[in-house]
Image (tube, rainbow, N blue to C red; front, side, top):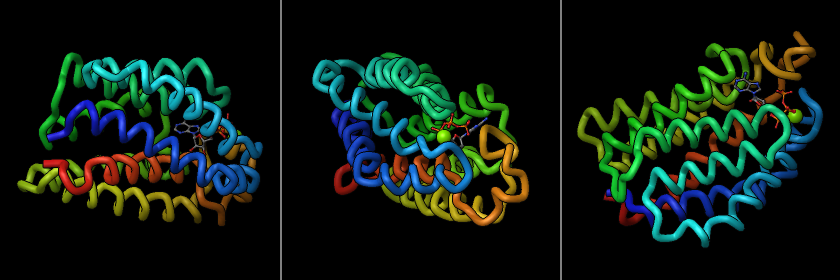
Length: 212
Ligand SMILES: Nc1ncnc2c1ncn2[C@@H]1O[C@H](COP(=O)(O)OP(=O)(O)OP(=O)(O)O)[C@@H](O)[C@H]1O
Ligand SMILES: [Mg+2]
């Protein structure tokens, strides 16, 4: 089972991953964008980290909704509203919940994915967040549907996200600033897809050891 403590730890661990890798994320965005992705994510998750103590005692839906609103309001650029929408739609799926089982966690992640797809209108292979998040959610769902535990299913999700992010390297960007580069966007890993891997790794870390 996933508890509210796991969710708070997930968000805090995500902030750690973003802090530790913000220079790398900005480097990726220097190659195909405007060199701000690491800074955007770091600004957002620093604000979110500051918010976490005030969210203790709230249910999972409320925690994720506050995270969403903070990201949307504090991050300029495409990624703030997009990741914000991920947490917002995820929160709608788990309104009022104090615990989540493997299937509910899968439904939560799937709603977050749908939110980003609706908001950003990216298709698979447009070289975006979707290229990491969609295979990850699919892998999670497949594992959980086959009786996999939360940890096992998250392991599948992280590995699919990593593969998906690597697979963006040869893609030509079709969305956002990177799309202005056309063919020249080939040969570089997508920054947003890379951040997506950190978000999922953080979730796996947060539940490792006692997530069932
Ligand atoms: N429509 C979209 N759907 C999903 N992800 C997207 C979309 N547009 C951009 N992204 C993701 O956002 C990342 C860029 O985020 P960043 O924080 O650098 O914001 P930005 O500089 O405003 O981006 P951009 O101008 O590329 O939209 C990209 O690497 C990509 O993964
Ligand atoms: Mg950018």
